[in-house]
Length: 118
Image 1 (cartoon, rainbow, N blue to C red):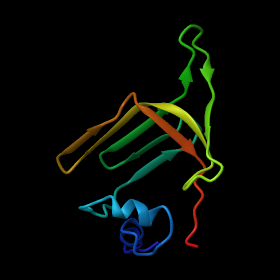
Image 2 (spheres, rainbow, N blue to C red):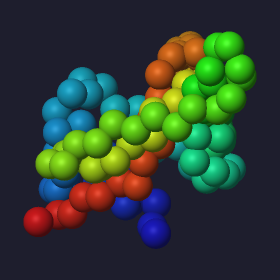
Image 3 (cartoon, rainbow, N blue to C red):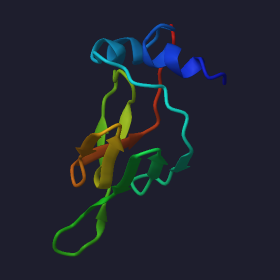
């Protein structure tokens, strides 16, 4: 991937869903930033870190027994995904360029993303 590619898809210039829709919701695009990325895909226990962004997912648990609960949202005609595992964010923080965003403890999804440029 060249360094130009990230700019063209996150601005929607290359077309295709979901980027055309997402680009229309962003007034001021910063970057792209070229930073080290770590990613561990493990369902509702997945983790990701990039620059000042850290995300760690956690499964829902039964409040009485502590057992992990598997929760799905199924969208047969979903825009980006069809079957998403619902979970919570054990950590979901972004601190970049003086902007702090903390969504820790809020709902999250992990899903196989499906889209095309057609």
